[in-house]
Image (cartoon, rainbow, N blue to C red; front, side):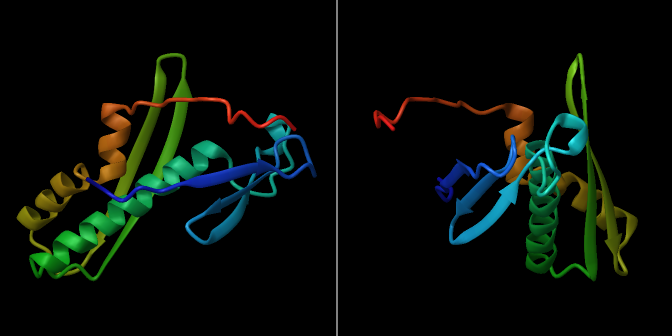
Length: 136
């Protein structure tokens, strides 16, 4: 079983979609772009999902390369999110730097698909919701 994480998200009130986020000792803001009615003061939710996929990909590849002592100098991942009527699509472009063989590169591409965020996105997740019971 993996690490349990919690995020507390509160409307900050400075604009329609401005939200303050606290998670594991970190704080940041989220918003929507101006084209969606926000003020673009922070990343939008789908941007953070794309960022999570990219970071998880890099971390997974780094962990594997270090474990297998592969000559991976650097890994960069660009993730593009494209919503459509058919659903959501995330495209990753992974750049591997180092004296890697073609076989090692292909293996790293396979390992990228084992990143936990990738697995979550392709398999789906159960989401439950309940009211806190607090009356404001």
